[in-house]
Image (cartoon, rainbow, N blue to C red):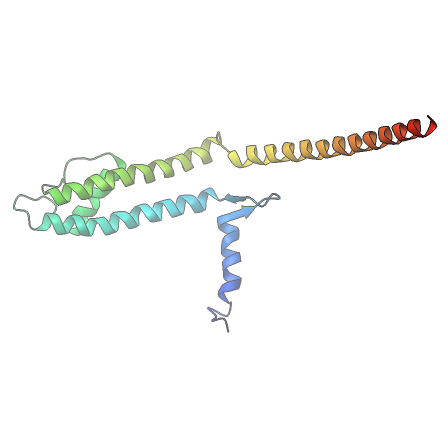
Length: 172
């Protein structure tokens, strides 16, 4: 028996959720929603910052000359590191803290770049590969159908030629 949540079974809720995340085109290809991808990117970014802020605070809290004294300081430092702004008001003084900030820089640059690319895609629409791929698939389908039609015609011609050759041999 399937457990229900709010009167709707999970097997019914998932397809409802999926229609907001992606749409499947006539070729069975999933085209993901920019909004869903952006939301996932932001959630992932801030989840990573939230977890790494605890690690950063752990390393920095015991340092004598630290300027990262609270979780909020650590969170802010990592947020600035991920965005590559780095105001300099908070910075790590321990090796462990510097390693955490360096890791956040590399992960954050990728995630912030991903989110920025989604925003640019939404505003400019210059890289809508879904449309381009769909057009190419339609062209490929038309070419394959035409090739099949030509193949059938060639088969008919071969059969006719074989018949004619057979008839020619019978008359000799």
